[in-house]
Length: 154
Ligand SMILES: [Fe+2]
Ligand SMILES: [Fe+2]
Image (cartoon, rainbow, N blue to C red; front, side, top):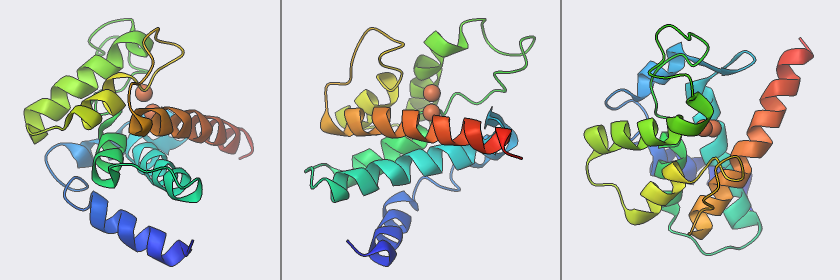
């Protein structure tokens, strides 16, 4: 698998979402350590695509990448307890992300909805129901661990 082609294809698949609506706002929020939510969702989405291709898993790549980019589209600083919508970020943010994504991008596919709403498994009881949902769920855990340790090494 050529890394250049993977990067080029990822840019093509993600270009309609990156930069539109409130997606750039994710640059202003910290996800883990020193990583912004924007950088986190790009890493997760890219990693999920790399896993699908590397493991030769047949997926709807457009829904995989777009769902990955929108999986944490909850749009608030979860460290700021006064302004977060509730005290249950870990449990409720997939729902906030899905609502915001539907508001802004309207035409979500069932796969994109699965990717966004089920990405917190196993911390949420309901597992993903699509291959794309499982790949983003796994990529999310890998990237979160990397971001956590990267921050500790600085
Ligand atoms: Fe999340
Ligand atoms: Fe995430």
